[in-house]
Length: 511
Image (cartoon, rainbow, N blue to C red; front, side, top):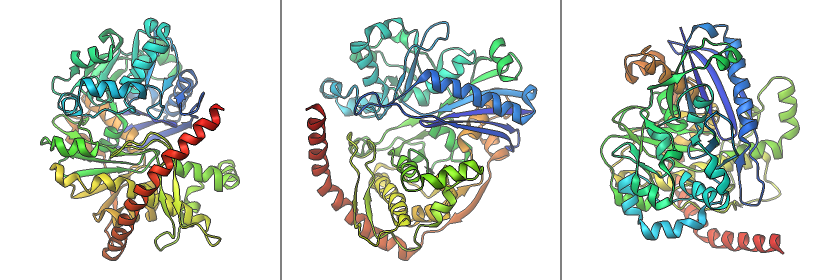
């Protein structure tokens, strides 16, 4: 008996086959590039990405040698980004990403008509251009033919499930990323649909995570090497699947996802303080687990690690790829043991809470002729974590208490990176032994949906494994508190200059 979990991210997709006890039977991964057709835009070529996803599913199934024994399939995916499709499962256009600037022109009017306090009470979010609604409004206004002929706009989890033969349905966690879900009714909000001018029939039906939403079609089954009729189960936001895959399902726990989008995701049951959440730019979203909610503190600074690799170590990366090796252990091994002699503001891409800065403009303090390559990487790791701490430090004021963190994602393979997080946050950081928690979380959703497991707690108990716990070093934590105070001052000084610099660059580009 095996389960297929698919994890579709912003820059790559993983497909994995697991046994019922969580043993990884096969894993395949593929990267794809973000397209930037114009300045400040970002999208995925939906056709190209789907072809790669299809291939990586087929390869994982073939490598597992248990394709005919797969009991169910589920997909976890990145959040806000959607794909327009026709009724006959044709792809109609690209997927505009959450970091794309298109749609930002609507935000002021939307907020004037529905203040953040009302939106948060209805949807659990505050206004921001990273969500799906502004992108849908932009498509409706500037690409009316595409909007009219689209049968459904689907988040990537529901898109992949739909392309495999399932019904067009979306789980609550991903539906929330659209800004159109009534979080209490667990259905699309008529008020928000009317506010944005979006037609309800353009969206899939909403459903809880871990519920069967169709089955693999005959053609798709033949292409992929799994039985026709294999149940397709509703997935989740990839961050929620990551939480499930590393066992973060109880109040007081938080996940630190150390990937492209560094993300702190605490779990809670009681309603947090709306005033604090709004003031900090934090959301409330359904967990994949019933009766649990999560919030996300995030930014895209993890992509800076890939930028660092491709800029500072391109030849070493190429040689490692040719040899079938991973260059990251060597690069992380170059980080100095002491605190980095640099201070970084990781605005390599639009940021998340608390301020959601839209324009990319990173800054570094302390460069000199003695700066080494490893110093820059450590500054990136530290800067990414300090940026998250701007919101983490306010969680107790909202009534969300985090006792411990669980580290997942590519960055968590580095002892140094995990210890930095423990030292900055001042709390224990336990590393998951499951390297592919997103794919495992999706597989556990599949298992719950087809009754391999009675419930989510049994699924976690049967599969999740944890490794070393990194305790905060009191001395390091004290020093990082000083660094954090300087970080906030540096940020307040640089931000206005960054805005002027970006404005100048736009004028020069338009000239």
